[in-house]
Structures are given as structure tokens and as C-alpha cells.
Length: 240
Ligand code: ADP
Ligand code: MG
Image 1 (cartoon, rainbow, N blue to C red):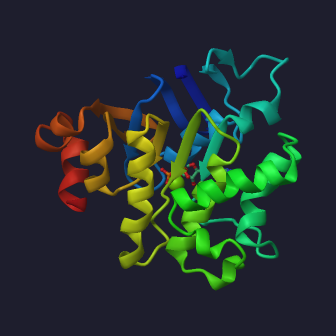
Image 2 (cartoon, rainbow, N blue to C red):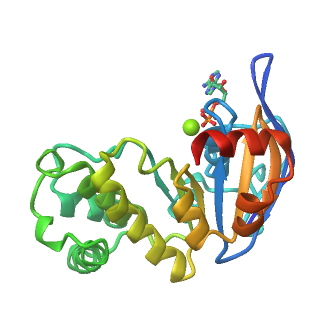
């Protein structure tokens, strides 16, 4: 579903991604962790072409992102992206936030888009908030709306960039539970997170990044119990 072959990227003189090789199968759940500034966000932003890269090849569902025929809007319709900051439209109701893209991009009829959005709000556990505005919701509820919005286009891939980092501790679990459900339903997911409980429970693989490199990739079991690399060990000793 996602392939990085020898991908490198620079910001000016600074090499932010160093020879990334990563193959993710359909239905796989991959957790990426690592210190701040190690290139995690940059790596996942490359997948929907929010960031250009200078070397190597990225393929998403078989399509080379360098293909000049590639439609950006089609690519992004297939990839849901959930950020640390929820980025909901403040002047729109919850339902309108979720319905917007299917209406505009998929050109669904308003009633079909609304039905589907209500199903998604049910799925994330807040159908009663459909007519509220983002400011009236808690952080955990806003993030669940953001997940529903990400799912509205029926994406093949969901990318999460530290989705619980901006949340108060008591709201983290309600968001992780929604993500675990998605993972168990077979969604292909890349999740940048330091929530190691989540990684243990649903990740197929955990990747440790440092200074733009994929230092270690392993099953959660081996990653936590037998980390191979010294830098991974040091990182784990700080966060666990
Ligand atoms: P992480 O998500 O692991 O914290 P990032 O991918 O956000 O790391 O950033 C990796 C490095 O790239 C950091 O040193 C950051 O300062 C730098 N960086 C990120 N975005 C830009 C940019 N647009 N221009 C220049 N440097 C950037
Ligand atoms: Mg980041």
C-alpha cells in the first residue's frame, strides 16, 4: 500500500530524511516513534505530497508520487490525515465539518453525505454533537470529529501525527479507542505516537526514528523487550 525506496529529503542543507526504505502492506498498522525533530512528521507528510522529496521513490497503492499524471486531489482523497491540532473549521458545525469533503470532492448528494457522516459520528461515539460547533467540544471530542472527517472520504490509508499529544490525559483513551477500532477493522494506518500501550495492543510493527534515519523496525514484542539499537534503548528508557 505504501512503499518508500531509498527516499532522502533536505530542507536546504539539512538532510531531514536519510535513505528511508519502508514497505507497508494493506491493513498493516505501523507506529513511528522517536525524539522530537527526528523527521517523523516529515516522513508521513511526504505520503500525501504535503512535502516534496529529492531522492528515491514513494509509491502509494502502486502509484509513483513522482508521476506527472498523478492527481493530488485523488491521492489526498485516499489518505485521511489526523494532526495533533485538530484543525476543524470553527465556523462550521461538527456535521458540516465531516460532510464538507464528500460533498465537494466526491460530489455526493447532501442527504447521502449527511447519512454517511452521521454513521461516522456514531462510530466515533458522538452522534449527539452533530449540530454543535468545535469550540463547544472537549479536545478529545474534537479529535474524534477530526477522525470522522478523515474517514469521510472512505480513505485507503489513515495517517495520524501525534493525535493525542495536545489532549488532556483523561481524553487520550477515548481517542485511542477509536483508533484501535479502526486498526482492528483492517485500516492501513501509520501512527506517529509515543503511546506505547497503543503500540503494544494494535501495531504490527514499531519503527524508531532518530536524526532522519529509521534506526530500528520490529514487532512490538521485540521492540519493547529486546530493542537492538543503543539509541532505541536510550529512548525507551526515557519514555517508559
Ligand atoms: P518530528 O516530527 O520527528 O518532531 P519533523 O519532521 O517535524 O520532526 O522535523 C524534522 C526536522 O526538520 C527538524 O529539525 C525540523 O526543525 C526540520 N524542519 C521541519 N520542517 C521544516 C521546514 N519546513 N523547513 C526547515 N526545516 C524544517
Ligand atoms: Mg512531528
